[in-house]
Image 1 (cartoon, one colour):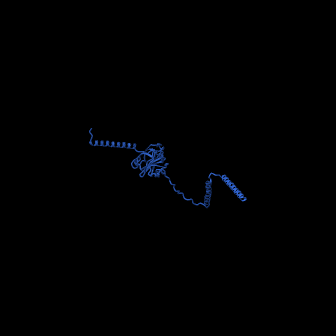
Image 2 (cartoon, rainbow, N blue to C red):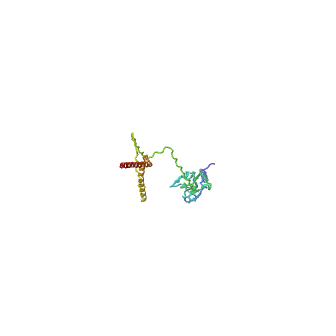
Image 3 (cartoon, one colour):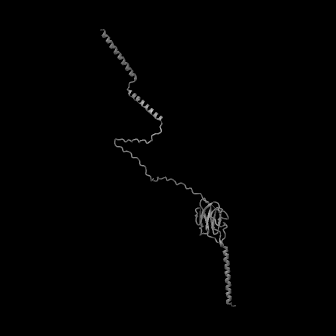
Amino acid sequence: MTSSPAGVRRVLASTTTAALVAGGMMVGVVATAHAAEEDPRAERHDGNVKTCEYAELGGEIIAVWDEKNEDLDNLEISGGEPGTDTHLTISGLADGVEVTGIVVKGGPAYNIYEPGERGLDEGVSWEDLRAPLVANDNIPEISHWFACGEPGEEDEREPEPTPTGEPEPSDKPAPEKPEKPEKSDGEETSTEPEESTDPEPTGTTDETSEAKASTSQADDDVTPAAQSDALADTGFGGASLIWVGALLLLGGGAALYLARSRFSSAGSQ
């Protein structure tokens, strides 16, 4: 049995149509199987947010990356660049940092991730954080994100040890030492006393001046007596002078008696 050309064309058209329908159905099944879903670890919210208080998260912003700010010192991350990446992974925290939540914004909504909640691990790392889905179940680019929590304490730097080596040279000139006068043979050098620069006492009373004057006068009266005693001390005591005087009186009396005796004898003759 021979087929007409028209019949062959109808068979070919039917086969092609069936193949296309089957292919379309397979693509639809595959696409449905691989369609993105909302992240069950996150809590989805519509609108925009830029503060921990508005997101109802404790603490303060400890890391942020948006069109104006990039403060990531407290976190170790990969991805998360606004306008470029669709996912963010936080793999480490700085010492002492505590995270209460991470907010990832993209499209018209944002996701809130809280460590230990809705299946998110309590400790790092936190992988593939993203914004909510947009139309056609697509994952949008991240517009901005931030993390809330408590920053670590500032490092207290220990004071640098004092070097034990030689001291560093100072720019100030050393004070000049006074030169000692040279000694010549047979001559001794003497240092004249410096004149006193003490100010003269002020406010002395008349009684003090009179006391000083009387003391000075008493010293003058005592000094000659002391000097006369020193001059009179020639080795003869007061008793020696008395004996000498007595002898002189006796001698004088004897001489007077003899003179009178001679005068009386001459008169009687």
